[in-house]
Image 1 (tube, rainbow, N blue to C red):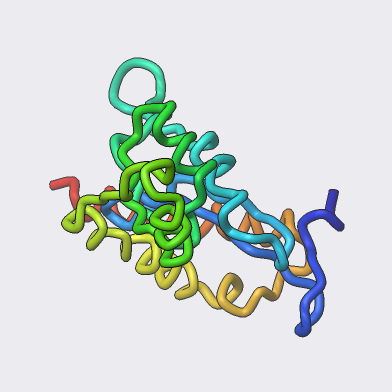
Image 2: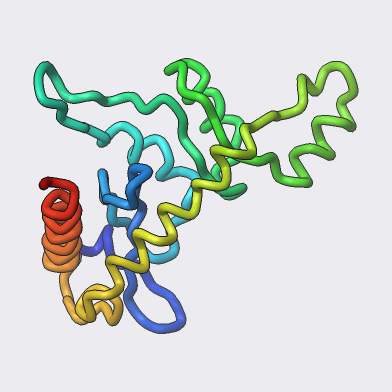
Length: 169
């Protein structure tokens, strides 16, 4: 299991963190993969792990909308969002648009996304900066994927606690 989470690169063995964040730059889910793993195949596993607890009832598992960059613009990701009635706020890659136009009427409709919601996509980038404020995560001192993931969870809990104490009177 450890070897699956550490991948080879020029710098040695690495791992990559895939995550989801809410609009307040708080982490919801972490998925750790080997460093050479692509981002797009991890889109659905990240979404499947989302569990947001409310004051009552069962946890919410389906967001209203998902904002992502062009790396997540695959046909499979869009199909998953469509079948789960989640609005996709993901722009289309140029090559995908060109292939769709080349097919003519068989290529389907152009992809549309809400530009105002897309502006909030930077919440993930801001969350990553908050996580990297902790030196152990920024420099990747931990040798095992398990301890690195534990550090991510610890830093995430610190972010949540700080946010909850600031909003509570």
